[in-house]
Length: 337
Ligand code: GLY
Image (cartoon, rainbow, N blue to C red; front, side, top):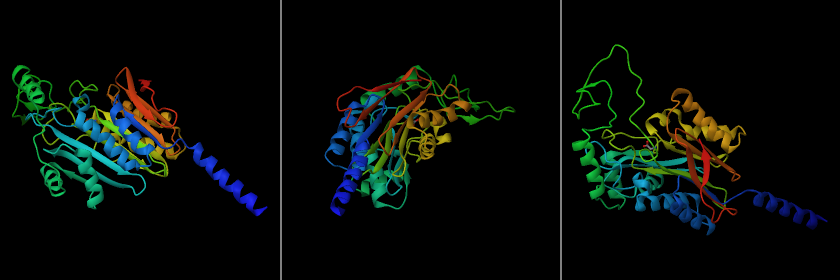
């Protein structure tokens, strides 16, 4: 009798385990190759951290949409710099790099910050020095394509668009250097025209066979940014967030606005209160829309049980990829904004 009860108990545990839709990976935008790489790792029993790191690495190498990796989004000086984040939902440990210069593998450097330091974020040239110590190769991130793009912006378009306000000479007509002008009435800045090809981030959330959650991002930020600018992607809670007790989320879009609202953290906290992922993502987006109705951005949310959803604003539709037991070949899920 005891033996039968024990077998029934084990069976129940297995059913409960199998009820969970894990392993699973969710990726922002049409970044299929990254999703395939991550799913490959998860399917073979690999960790969520490996899946997110390796998945985002594919995008960095393939220069996805030219908004991830080297040779995209030159800043005002024509240089490409990278932001990336990796968060471990099991330990709540974070590794991130911001405005990383001359190193291609931003998310892997972030992983080294996570695993080989007790810091969370390293920036700029010092992040480069750290990466070199960790064995990464230093090389230019500028390509013929990014140089051409920057030359056109600088020489033909007179540095338009740019991110300056209340400076002289008039930044809507002239290049810098600029000096501040004090206006009696501060103007509300909404940024230059932004779309998915100007603020596009790979954001990934994965859950492995053990139920461990990881989330991460990688991007080259905003085109023609002021050198030194850091976006939402490397900021925990803004670009991505993960907590084994709840799930994870990742964000993409106009990072200068979005990081003020920590949308990934908001989505995870909504799920912690029992809100389903789609509504949790909507709540995170809604919080930003209240203040910036036209902002461009999206959030993907994944619960620890493998339920997922997304929400977006400022574009017609937002595609994202899912790979789990039920979606081994399907195309992107499209959310209307
Ligand atoms: N979401 C990318 C950025 O604005 O930097």
